[in-house]
Picture 1: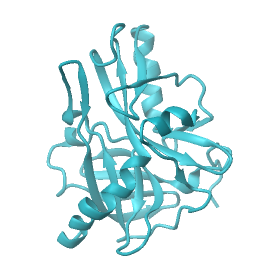
Picture 2: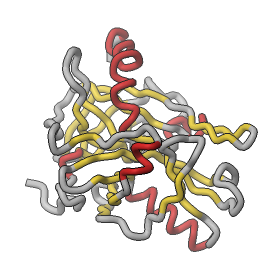
Picture 3: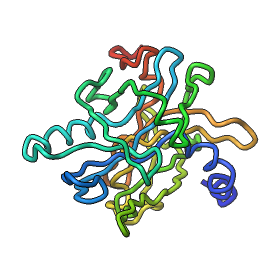
Picture 4: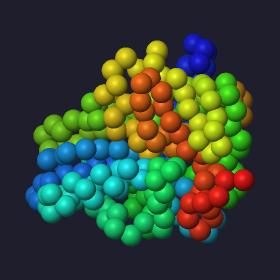
Length: 236
């Protein structure tokens, strides 16, 4: 991504994309969700035309279930407005798929709207194809930027801009070895909605960040979502 594209990401695209996602976290606290946080991730908000969905990674829900089996007091919370986290029960997803590392949940739009967030209108703006060298931008909430001060929870917002390095069906990848020097600095971005960026053109939701390893970041294409919130099982 060129210096000009990085400036566009920060000043032009970030304000357009930040309302479509947010942080999600686990906590063992019984008194306030602002303490006892054990892990965090990210989520995206999508309107398919048939359902309003919260989308995060399959492994986020799976990790929560594993940790709660050892700590029954563990609960999951989501932040539409970081000053007022909302309890979230992930027991009944619409669907989940380990292959794409995606889980979908139908969600009440009222707290989303009151928290200043929006659902990306995937029914009106379908996910476009993705190709090598396409520019993709997203906002993550990495755990190392998380803080609790005076009982106020803060999730540092970090914009990322990458170029697609390879495409494998409904999965694509980017080299982030030069962008992120500390692997831990990507922890917490799982589930972040990502957008295809083109100068002078509207943003388009194209996928979700799912995993990172050895300098590479993986994404699942938004075309893996069906209008009813289910996840495709056969890739043509």
